[in-house]
Structures are given as structure tokens and as C-alpha cells.
Image 1 (tube, rainbow, N blue to C red):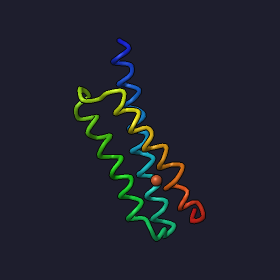
Image 2: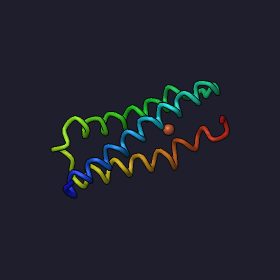
Image 3: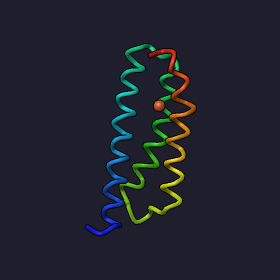
Length: 88
Ligand SMILES: [Fe+2]
């Protein structure tokens, strides 16, 4: 496997993990009655959309695009996810 193919395989796995995690998180927040679930899910959807666009066409993926998406995910975890900590 070339380094490029290995990179995209790892990226694909990371994105799938992110999608799975978002689904789990949304189920958990729904079960706990988190009042801002719709808004939180919308934030997940923004990230999902950007990630899905990459998965549809790997040719558009650039280092900057990956870096920006990862920064968006990290910012989500460190900021938006902190809003529900008291609800789980
Ligand atoms: Fe989240």
C-alpha cells in the first residue's frame, strides 16, 4: 500500500469513527433529555457534511482541508461538547 493510500485509509477510519461517535452521543443526549440536542446535532451535521464531501471525492482533499476539519472537530469536543457535561 502506498503512503497516499494508507493516509486515506486512516483518514477514512477516523471520519467513520467520528460519525459513529456523533450518533452515539446524540442517542445518549436524547436519552438524557438534553434540551439543546437539536442545536448540538446541527453542529455535528456541519462536521458530517464537510467530512462526507471528502469521502465522496478524495481528489479534493488537501492537507489544509484535513487540518481545518480536524481543528473543527477538536474545537467541537473542547467547546460545544462541554455544554452537556452536566447532563450525562
Ligand atoms: Fe458533540
